[in-house]
Structures are given as C-alpha cells and as structure tokens.
Length: 512
Ligand code: UDP
Image (cartoon, rainbow, N blue to C red; front, side, top):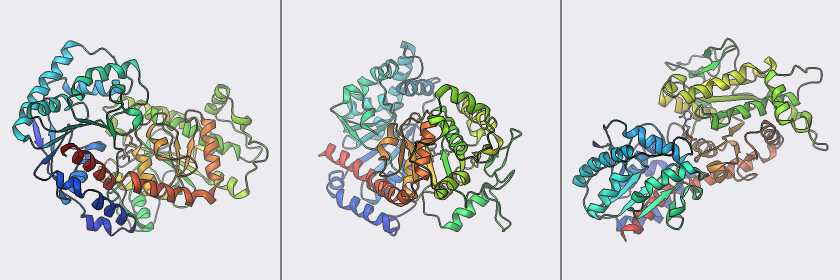
C-alpha cells in the first residue's frame, strides 16, 4: 500500500554548474541552505504522494530528492497505493471541486471510505517513520493519512497543495470544508500562488511556486541542428537528408479529417517562417479556439484588397463580438511593410497530446474535436497557415518535440482562459522565447506585461488576441529584451534550485 520509489540523480550539481546561466543559481542555492541542512541532520524527509509517474508532481520529485541528498539531506519518496474501490474517484471529485466543478455534496459513505483508507495508509506509514523525521504530504489523496501519522508520531509535518483556483465558489468551499480538519493537523501548508490559499489559512501558508529542471529533455539546451533533427525525426519538417524517424511521429490534421505526417500536404516552414505555437492539453480552458480565431482575424486584416473570402466561422463570430474597428487598425498606427509581411508569412501551430492518450478523457476528446471543427471552417487560404498537431505518443520523444518547437517558434502563446500555474510558460520563458500569455492565474504571475513578454487582456476574445499578437509582431526591437528578462525571471524564481532552497528553508525552520 505504501511503495518506496528509487530516486536516481541524473545530473550532478557540478554538471548543472557547467552551464554559465545555471552556475549562479546553483551557487546561490548552496550558499542559502547550510543552516537548514545542519538543522535536518539525523532526520529523514519523507515525501508522500499518490503517483510515481505522470504529471508535474511525479516529474519533479526525483529531481528534488536527488538534490536534497546531494546536499546532505536524507530524503525518501513514498507513494500510496489504495485499492479500496472508489477512493481515487472520490479524491478526483474533491480535486475537481477545488477547481469549481462537480457536485458539492460530500456524502457520509464517501467520508467513511476516505477515512477508512487513510487509516490503513497511516498504519503503514507509522511503521516506517521515526518521530524525528519530517513528513511532507502532497495533495488531498494522502492528506488525512499524513495528518494521522503526524498526530500519532508527533513529528513535524507539511501539506503541499498543488491544486488551485483563484475563484472561491460554493463548490470549492465545500471541498475546503471537507479537507480543513486534516489540513489543520499540519504545521504548515504550502501553495503555488497566494491566490490559491483558502481563507482559513490566510495568515498561515507559505508560497512555493512550481519549478522546472533545466536539464530535462523538455528544457535542455539544443543546438540549431538538434532542433532541426528532432523536428525532422518527428516529421514536422520535411528533409531529403538521412534522418531516423521516430517510431510514431507527430501528426497533423488534414482536410479530409484524418491525422497524417505534419509534412502533408506541404512542409509547414517551422524553421523559416514566423511561427506562433501553443502546446497544451486539449482542454477548452486552454484557449486554443480564441487563439485560432484571433490569429485568423489578424491574417485577414493584412489580406490583399479584393481577396475577401470570409470564413463561415468568422462571420458569425463578428456578429457575436463585433470585430475591433471592423478589422481595421486604429488611425496613426499603420503597419510597416516588414510588420505586415511578418503577419502574412506567419503560421500558427496548435499542439497537444496524441489523441490515444486522451482515449479515456472524454473532455479532452471533445476539446480536440471543437478545434478540428473550427479549423475546418477556416477559409482555405488561412487554414493552410494553421496546423493542428498531435505529439508523438512516446513521452521522451514528445518532450524533445516540445523543446524543439518552443525553441524554433517566433512567439510561444499560452492563451489559457484559466490556468493553475502554467508550466508551459515557464518552459518557454526559460528558452528565451517571446511569450504571449493570457492574463490569468500563474501566467500573469510569471509574465510581467511589457517586461517578459505580452499579456492578452481578454483571452476569450479573438479581437483581443489579434490585437496583442499584432503588437508583438510589430515590436521585434523588443523581443530580445523581453526574452532575456523572461529567462532571468525563471532563473531567479522557477528553477529546481530555487525550489530546493525554498523547501529547505521551510523544513529547516520547522525543525529548528
Ligand atoms: N505537455 C506535454 N505534452 C503535451 C502538452 C503539454 O508533455 O502534449 C506538458 C507541458 O510541457 C507542461 C505540462 O505538460 O510541462 C503542462 O503543465 P501546465 O502547468 O502548463 O498545464 P496543466 O496541463 O498542468 O494544466
């Protein structure tokens, strides 16, 4: 029921420090943590969550623990396996409630199930932990079990909540009411953003934002020929040169409704054209549709006079929302030729997971279908500039493709209508991409408008997307400034080293 997961450190700190940008981050961490490491001596830090693979938490855990151990902090990772039927369905419901969806009534049967399963997990954990150890429990699944362990062994305990919504609703309040008694048994609670802290913890929570590993397949440095090589192997770029294709390459939506190699019906021009790219799960809240419509609208604005074929979708949308300025720009802001050409040449790539991986995710399926439909109803002259792409199913290959796409894109977009934190934004900022994000949740916290990129004021409105994208395309003289600032911001706040520093700060203070 409780499994210990092996952790291997893929890269040493010395290896990280060979990177000129990372050297400072590694050193700052080493300087900051000495007292905390000393305070934790003789104790084991136990990280407890509910999954060993899949998702951001499981991805970061080995990196975090690997660095803890390198720094001299004894740490273990335990995953709870609960076979009681309905347990994970219930905790998933609680998760959804925290995000504001689902039935807010939590019935006695569900409470009893959660309590009972937590009791057996706790019994097992109590046998493994010592009273001087430190317990860190992630998310609601092991929350109650951890609370019981903390109480019985009297050890210092932290609850780390990775879930968050800025809106407190009747539903989220119902979930918090349910969780609250256990949360109170912990010495500290940690959240990703201040806006996610529930009312009863307002004076009592610590903020630790998520972080990325700069050496992972998704984020490591790639030389230009490596970017080209990965894109060619994924069949996202056509080449006559010898390359070894991935077993299952990326695929792109075709006019006949099938998905085929992305080089069909013609090469996208990823390495040569101004490319706007958004990579996300297929979820209506990721804002793919208004991004597609905003991009199409901007394209139409620069279309030569006489080429007036209106898209079906756009006609209705214009009636709904009223196009900004009837599609014309405000006076006195004429585009230069280079600016207009950039828009004419631009291509939009909307990328997400392979649909087979969303087979058991009807919402993901539906979101992808809505995008397919919107794409089909575009005017063919614009449709050819928009690619709906699914990633290679292999995790490692897909990570490399995300890396390469973010590096070759002129603009990385993340137009989410709602967003927990937005690791895709962190990943792109780290790569010094030019960012266009929506002004929501963690995206607005990461990108400072006009400093690290641009924010779309109203991500649901294609007009707002079009205007912001137009402004980005019109300001190439700012791109270097934004992207350098973005990378600096990630190095200062959102790398694994900063995360380790914050964790050890919290844990050190707790045991002192
Ligand atoms: N991602 C991925 N494959 C995809 C789309 C996204 O591996 O097809 C990754 C992406 O690079 C990021 C994570 O999934 O690391 C998504 O995290 P984010 O915080 O942006 O959004 P979430 O999916 O958690 O809402």
